[in-house]
Amino acid sequence: MIDALLMGLNGLIVGLTNLTLPNVIMISAGCGLLYLGIKKDYEPLLLVPIGFGAILVNIPLAGMMEPEGFLRYFYDAGVLTEIFPCLIFIGIGAMTDFGPLLENPRILLLGAAGQFGIFLTLLLALMLGFSYLDSVAIGVIGACDGPTAIYVTSKYAPHLLGAVSVAAYSYMSLVPLIQPPIMRLLTSDRERKIVMKYEGKKVSKTLKIVFPIAATIVTCLIAPKGTPLMGMIMLGNLLRESGVVSRLTKSAENEIANVVTLLLGLTIGATMEGSAFLKGQTLLVLGLGFLAICLDTVTGVLFGKLMCFLSRGKVNPLIGAAGISAYPMAARVVQVEARKYNKHNHLLMHAIGANTGGQIGSVMTAAIMLSVLKGMGLG
Amino acid sequence: MTVIGMGGTLLSIWLLSLVIDLLRRIFPFRESENKE
Image 1 (cartoon, chains in turn red, cyan):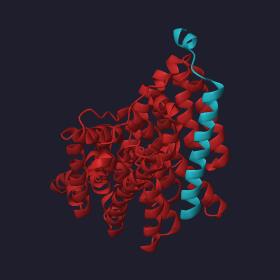
Image 2 (spheres, chains in turn green, purple; image 1 turned 45 degrees about the horizontal axis):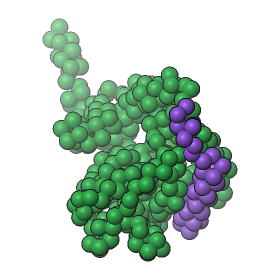
Image 3 (cartoon, helix red, strand yellow; image 1 turned 180 degrees about the vertical axis):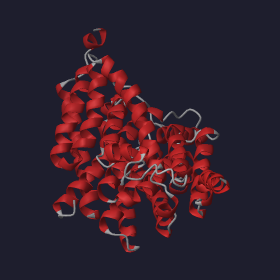
């Protein structure tokens, strides 16, 4: 009788007795992410489910990510198959207005320059001994584009998925802190004060409808392996601009995006199991990811300076910092920074153009890397 | 890979900007369209 009681009691404390130090650390990290999301408002839509997922997966014996675990089903069905990032892209496309970019197509080049940090980080990761595919996944953190980073990593380096996605989303939320010092360091006082007038050129509705179709055909023919990403973002945008499927547009930017964000966040958090996550390699990935975003800002601003030189001082180099995918955060950072030096300088619309260019640029970069890897026989 | 990647990204984005430029010429903004 007493034995049975003791065994019953043992069943109640077995979770506690199986708790390891890595579990405790990761539960604390999960709470930290929840704090950042709830209290500091840093990307709460993602950090809250990621943080909670990290707590759930570190509860001993809960088996959330075991072969028949609750979160394993979502992970296998949505992340490993790359369906979640693609669905999120439909929502992003439906929320994005490419109008400012269509007004001034040359600004799109800033969206390409803002991705060069990815390749520099890739080189650095290779030098540090990471494999080719791991290095690609680490470099993509610099895209400042969560779904793209998840798509590439789940394809080529699923063992790094937790570290890469946490880095991508955390750094994305820290863009307002990371970018301004780099922007100030690389530009002169005179350059920061350059006024760019916004002419507000009007764009025809037909152009807005034709753009996502043309962009899909052109970019996917160049880098076919990126078709799921580019195709979905442009499909979302076509739904928005066509104006004939408002129900689908609303679903894409609300229901689909919200449900997938929740499930994606939870499953990403669930990859943060203590014994697998707490490695020296994870710290390296986080460090390299930070460097990638810094280098993206550097190359973006330097390209902005080149455009400033070529245009004989008509382009404010600060807008180069918006050539990343963190939309519209990076554009707002440029606006705030420019107004510190000239209260009458409104760079927002130019920066929004560069920022939407950054969204296309990040997807294009990933697509090109996937296609090149395929060409090298690695994909 | 780095060279092809950076060059390829810049080249394809430049090509896309040319396509946008071309589309702007084919489908210019008209006031009448705005009224619709």
